Amino acid sequence: MENRRRLGLIVLLAGLVLLSGVANLAFGAVPIPTREVIAALLGRGGSTQTAIVLYARLPRLCGCLLAGAALACAGVIIQGVLNNPLAAPNIIGVNSGAGLATALCCALAPGAVRLTPIAAFFGALAGVLLVLFIAERAGAARITLVLAGVAMSSIFSAGIDAVVTFFPDALSGYTDFRVGGVKNLSMARLAPAFWVIVIALLIALSLSNELDLLLLGRETAQSLGLPAKWLRLALLMLAAALAGAAVSFAGLLGFVGLLVPHIMRRMVGEDSFPLLLSSALGGGLLLTVCDLASRLIFTPFELPLGIVLSLTGGPFFIWLLLKQRRGGGGT
Amino acid sequence: MIELKNLHAGYPGRPVLNGIDLEFRPGEVLAILGPNGCGKSTLLRSVNGLLPKAGGDVLVDGVPLERLSAKDIAKKIAYLPQSRSTPSITAGRMVLHGRFPYLSYPRRYSQKDHEIVKRALERVGAEDLAQRPLSELSGGQRQKVYLAMALAQDTRTILMDEPTTYLDVSCQLEVMALACRLAEEGRAVVMVLHDLPLALRCAHRMVLLSGGRIYQAGTPEELYKGDVLTQVMGVCLGRVETEDGWRYFYR
Image (cartoon, rainbow over all chains, first blue to last red; front, side, top):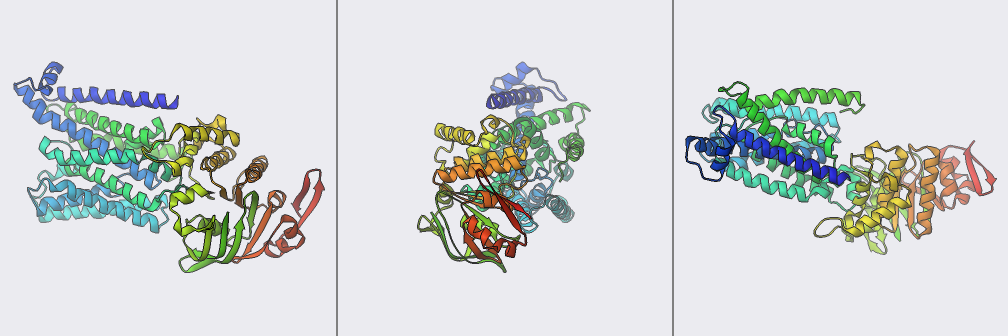
């Protein structure tokens, strides 16, 4: 019964992703009829509209789906491993770690586009390992972890600012990077991140039983034969790969990693397999819808995606804190 | 059977257990008692391999613990720790994870696993809880689900760290009755208990720890008569005989 409900929900999410995807390709400064969109996707068009769909909107849509899925799943993994529902890649310094590494990579090796996901991965990994280190040292007290993450985020952000100060040309469109968005993407630029995200998602799904076990607490997990220490490390590396790959092309998008896992947890529960699957779809859906809104609200002007996302994510986060307090669940 | 020989264990810079010799015998409920900080939980953790021992031996069916893999240990010893998370997964799913040590390629739980889980839930009287989220259950119901998970793990030895704490009296008695039934089936059940009257009433054998050593081990009768509980725990106990055995109480 429960499984059927979850399956229905996942099918519904997939349908919504498809719908919002088509809408994302069709609407914008220049509205394009759905017929033309489909023709362009099938390689049958030859007009300007086809070019807009294939070279401007399709990479954007793919960017939204990839970044949304990657950041949401990174959130699910980090929250599960640290047993802390408030941990998310943007809160505990994983995104800003990846951002710093991306900025450094752009400054020191401009033009090496293929290197940025790798640099972002190592930046995110540094963030994740610092979190793990602090969690081990401080006994993983929930509030300590979040506070330490905020401090680390601030350190990494200062690093990004320093890079931009010394290499003003390094991050062309630095504001865009900082706010986060999917403008000016090309399929070639997305390709390395695409492979990293797809492979990391498949591995994460295959480790869903292990992630479930970690939710039962470290001692219970170990007593069931799980090498908890190594697995925490491996899962956090996966989260780093996901968040790093997303940040490498979409910049510092906040809230997806916090917002989506929380909504999905309420809808499908904490079983990792359906949670990861629905979060991947939900993350993609959220970014696709926000991207569409960012283009439509002030047409023909465009708001950066990160701003629309934060304006929806911020109030939700506050509501979440108030609700948890009322419900007796503390931080 | 599990044998501890001159077991030393503890934490960096803080030895806790100093030379424990003990056997966990099949068919027996063994209660481990002692004041706070005497090493009861440390003993269970080091037997289970969660805490590396500092010296001595833990033999599982004659094989040193360090020669067994984590999954092999999990097939022989189930462990219910003192503090447990309550994720919002269903009770049935939780019990299913007791089958994790037996999980092999393609890494999906089989029909047989699901049948074992169903039987385990029936054994603890929690079959109606299978579809309920763990976070919605009462303390007593959760304890039953955890016990079912340990049963699904299908081990010859079950270690429980304070399984009756925070439970109301009827749930405590239910947990103890289940422990006795598991022992009757030939399992070794080892429990850390703080409730002396409950331990005296239900356990087959008792071990009293003090300062990381065994102060005395024996039957409830021997410990009660020897007055060691007063010496170590600082409490006076009395008892009355009823139709189904002795009932103990604090004076």
